[in-house]
Length: 332
Image (tube, rainbow, N blue to C red; front, side, top):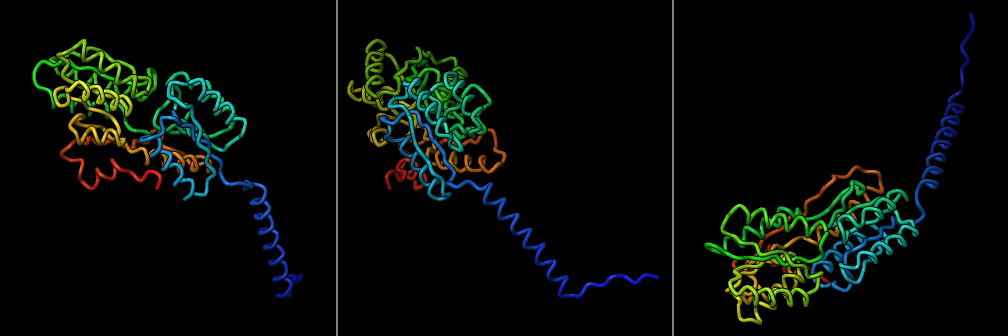
């Protein structure tokens, strides 16, 4: 009968120590080779950098706060004006060459940004859309207001303000952006539920206050019986309000807008604007960076994240909750 080999305890301990060292060394080597030697790099492409007051400024605040909190390196780019779609495309082409880990895109055009979105994905860069989506499934997630629902809210407010047969108009901004399309659709859906509304048309301000002002002034002169207007974004609302006030029609022509710039808050207090649909751009900016980092980390994202919207009028604008939306901590 053969006797089993026996190993002294010190030898066993030594063998275990060597094995443990090998495992630790292997993990260390994996971490060194697989962990990037820089913070996660994210490019955020907004729609406009000259029209920066209000909505986009607050969104960028959210971006910067998330970048600081999570240790990301974020670069914000964008065309001077929302109408400069080609400029945004060229900037994104340059961004792809820098090989960031993720790109957050607020698309200036629903269809026009699809080819560059495909280039981003083909380059192995994570793509998140914020505020405005694109006509493809290339983005891992869209973080935005439910603009169809928000448009319905605006139409509902106008319906409450007007009695009987009413002629109304929509002042929009950039034709072809997903937000514009969905908001207009929502307004139209709501107003078409009541046969009493005569919608004379949708007019495009190109996202410029002065153009919205000129369009509204001419519209009111040509339609002295116009009873109500919906402005679909901040410049369109402010420009329409400026024309209504100048013509002495504040309160006579009901105005429902979008967003919450200082000018809009002033017009709301003066009774030029009767209600405004306020989004949550800080949440959009913050979540876009947070979700981009999760995507970089390999996590699965919800295809759409709704950041909600709230209707604010003169009666509820002074509540604590709504004051936070109307006066976010821009430039803090």
